[in-house]
Amino acid sequence: MTSKNYNGHQEMVQVDGRSTSAATFLKSTSRHQQQQSQGGYRPLIFNEDDSKPFGAGYSHADILRATTKPKSSSSSHTRLDRKITYADLDDDWDASLDNEVISLGVKSPNSSPSLSSMPFASATSTSLSSYTSPPLSSTEFSHSADLYPATRRSSPTVGGLKAQYERIVNDPANSLHMIYHPDASATEGASAAEIETINARIARINKFKRVLQESNVDILALRNLAWNGVPDELRPMAWQLMLGYLPTNADRRVSTLARKRKEYADGVAQAFGTRGGANMSSSNVMGNAPGVDQSVWHQISIDVPRTNPRIKLYGFEATHRALERILYVWAIRHPASGYVQGINDLVTPFFQVFLSAYITVEVEAYDPGLLPKDVLDVIEADTFWCLTKLLDGIQDNYISAQPGIQRQVAALKDLTQRIDYSLVRHLQKENVEFIQFSFRWMNCLLMREVSVQNSIRMWDTYMAEGPTGFSEFHLYVCAAFLVKWSSKIQTMDFQEILIFLQSPPTQEWTEKDIELLLSEAYMWQSLFKNATAHLRSGIAAPDEHYQ
Image (cartoon, rainbow, N blue to C red; front, side):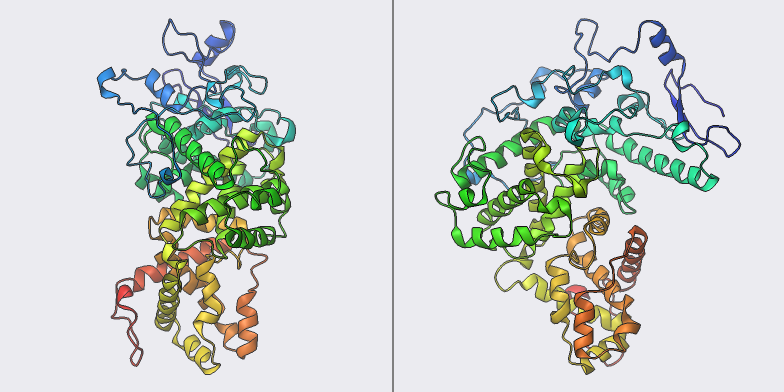
């Protein structure tokens, strides 16, 4: 094995089957060795006079500024603080277009200092001396490679919380240097195929890191990578960027996140007549708060306990309270639709993904009540805003009469006729209407048909497709899903068809099955989107929108 030295940085060395160390590992270079000989690794500082290390109070943008020329003071614009009212929950804002910079802190529930002001050397933090350089290969090395070194695996804190969670709360980009890569001993005795799998995974993570650690993230490059799936460690940040919640400009992330989280916290306080989270631990207390719309609250309080009942995460009290607040605030902010059954399913991938950013244990079995309240508040706020972003693109699915779903069901029938006419003819013969089985597919985005983990993988691709991913591309996924069972369905009668399609045999599906489904959907989209020449004779033309 060999290593190359790029300006004193470390390079990831990959294992060939002949090495005694059967894994990818990091090899120290002269710069790291020299620092160790001088008394240990010293954290980066802004300048010679400023001895503050990069910690909880600093972000990716701060690190970038340390290596670039400071901007002129005249180029920064601040806005006077103002009282945020209920109408200030600007649901249609886009972080990538919002140029305002407002400095707001994350308020601690016990009047303690905000997370953004906590010193790096806290009781739950580990020193920067535990870091090693990023495992970037020679072809992936960039000028900012040393900004996010891969950390050695550290012991998890009490409750499964990551040791340096404060830094992730402050700026999700800080998680980029906390990704664990196995060393040689971790996979000793592994086969050549296993080694290749590990190296391929690390190489893919490095590709994402190169995009995500830039001072201005290239969204198109991120979407191109995300179409084939986002690594679990990077998914929270990638989703927030692709949805337009997290600014692509690193300089604006800390202030934007703090402002939006504060707006949500103020909205919750106004909705339930509370401040600082008081009296929010009981569903009954929240539902009986002055001004709460009882009809909306009643339906939400019924649906939340029914959400993913087989997953332990969604049975905990803390999860129920968080989902109830998210759904109720969204409903009263969108009176044209209000709360509609099915939205409770759509909130769960966000909650699960964002929770995973702060813990080291299995997310589907974790009790969010073990988290510090500041962290749970942040997860809740981020989930609310990303749910809002998603629903903004498909809101006509949930307004009166749900016209968006009606159009999609009609379009699904037209598309299926193009792909598999014999299947449609059999459904017609058995008097099965598409609305009878596909309404739920559109309303819940197939979340009742596949597991949450598989839905999360599907959503990687939906977000990579851009603004129409959850509407247009989802239509092709539904068509591929239906056609997949064509041969079975054509042997069934009316009752058997409906029972089968309401509970398809997807319990054993893996990520590979989902990726095959997405690939087929992409093929149908490439063939039939904006095309009418493929219509079979005697079949009515599809909706004008899909011609």
